[in-house]
Image (tube, rainbow, N blue to C red; front, side, top):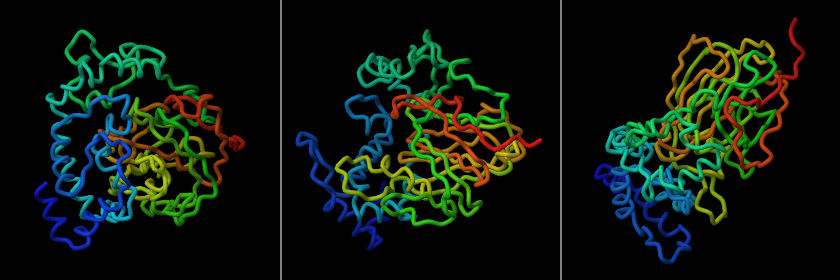
Length: 372
């Protein structure tokens, strides 16, 4: 944090931004909650945060699981905050801070929140929410060992990337190439076609800019997109095929599209915008179905550490449902990108638009006539 403090104080523009963001932030609507009033207090809070694992709080969903974002969110929706959080130097400093936090979150000491007491992820309140989401108990849904301490999880990270038990999320129609399956446990956010190679993705309606999303690797392909839920953080192949390229593109952590909404969670409202500027993993797959051809899975980190861990490499042969990688530690979203000649129909999902599609379920039907 001393290095971060020196960066702010030695750079005139950042020194201005880290003062003005506190002047521009709206008043805290919770009069009983202490507010951070300057960058020194902010650094002190961040310094404390990276010594702790996230705790569960149903009454504060913004902070629960992503405490760093809970601290920074009010400043993300200010002009000065946007300038600061898009700075390459600031994001490099966040990266250093998060590396330190990672060492704790993968250590056994981080299991102190994997408990049944208040604030623990196995508390009655947390268990009830997870049971309601999945329609089954935690022990039925997840690979764990209830008879062991912390249900057998070795760290906070081990809990965060927990796996479903076999057959809880089966891959539907695994041998039918006319269907594309859901790659993540996710809420469908948007399906777009006719996407431009380069677009003004910062505008209010946030059109996608493929050159930016794909790091100028491929252009002119429609986009299907979902926002990842809090429950399951692993990615799976939506098609049979072969990995032809893998890239991890560095980016921002807390830059969102500015708006007038009083809700501090601006990053969640910036779904399209952040795909072009946030840290993201690109996995290009040549589908065995020639009507699909080349497609791309894009895993995007949103806020917090949001590390993307890729488990495949160029040349790997995939079957539907094979694991591609995972999100670690923080919020996240993803896209599936296809060629313009691939004709797709989005299939019906859950009746509740806020309910996640199940990973491995049917997502798209390929409408092109089968090639003889």
